[in-house]
Amino acid sequence: MGTLFLEKHFSPLDILVKNFFQQEQEEFQTPTNRIINHPVDIYEDKTGLYFDIACTGLTKKMIKVDVEGDVLRVSYDKKELDKIEDTHFYHSGIAKRSFNLGWKIARRFKLTEIEASMKDGLLKLFIPLTPESKPKTVSIK
Image (cartoon, rainbow, N blue to C red; front, side, top):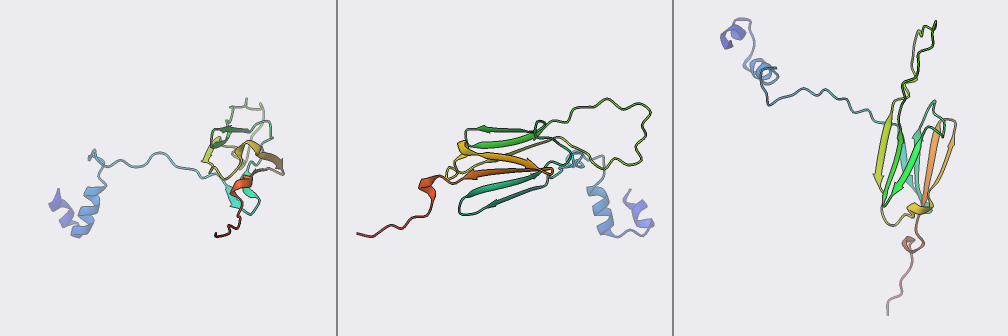
C-alpha cells in the first residue's frame, strides 16, 4: 500500500495523514454529533447576575426554568408539529431547536429570589446578590 502512494508522488507526511485518518483504524472515530451553542449572554454587576437567552419564536409557556439546589436549568423541548396540508415551505430558517442549558450558581447569589421576564424573543433572568456577599469595609483592631 505504501508503494502505491509513493508512485502517485505523495510525500511521507501525506501518507502519515492518510493512515491516521483511515477508517479501518478503530482508535480514531470521526465526530458525528455537532454541539450547537445556544445564544446566551451572562453578565454581572454590583446588584446581581444576569442571563439573556435567545428564544426566538417561542412563548414563555414553552420554556421551563428550574432551580434545584444551586443549579439553574433553562430548557425547551421541541414537539413534532403536524405538517400543514397543502403548504410548501420555500425556506424554513426559524429552527426552534430544543435546548437544555444548565449552570451551577455560586452561593453569593440568592437563587431563591430569581426573577424572569420575556420580551421580543429574549428571556431575561436576574439573580440578586446575597446581602452578606456585598463588599464591606473591615476595620483593623
